[in-house]
Image 1 (cartoon, rainbow, N blue to C red):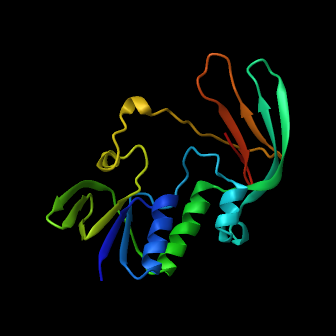
Image 2 (cartoon, one colour):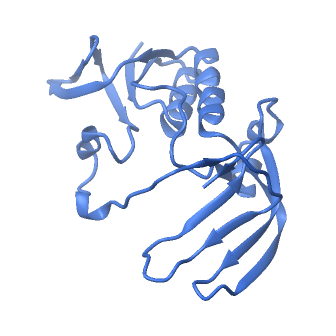
Length: 198
């Protein structure tokens, strides 16, 4: 049986690990934090929910929202009602769900930070802070901030933006996207089950 290392246990890595383990490969998912919160609205589109029905039917906490308001830099507002709602998850909850599914499919999930990777013939060697790992194949799903992203992309720091996240102890029924003067980007306000992700 071939070994596959999945570096990164976020949504992409956890889901890849689930599919590969379910197909009969020996899979090890390595991630330094596993399920954790991060600056992210947490919204999953209706298309994602249709393609992966378990995301809508799971019993983990989530919120369905079908109204969005866009706020222009001059304060003008445009309200939209979606034909199908979005599901809004805490990233910690979503990651936990996906990692549990990967484990149930047979993937081994390890908490460690991979700090180096080297191809040795037809085999991969990985150096972690806690341990070393080896695999026949490698899936890099570490996200934008991890130096291992350079294994599969030519993105530079100039291609990145900064994201800040806040959890506001308040509830509302709609998503809000605000565009501010002299700010490249936007502010999101996503209502989760017990707070706003901003």
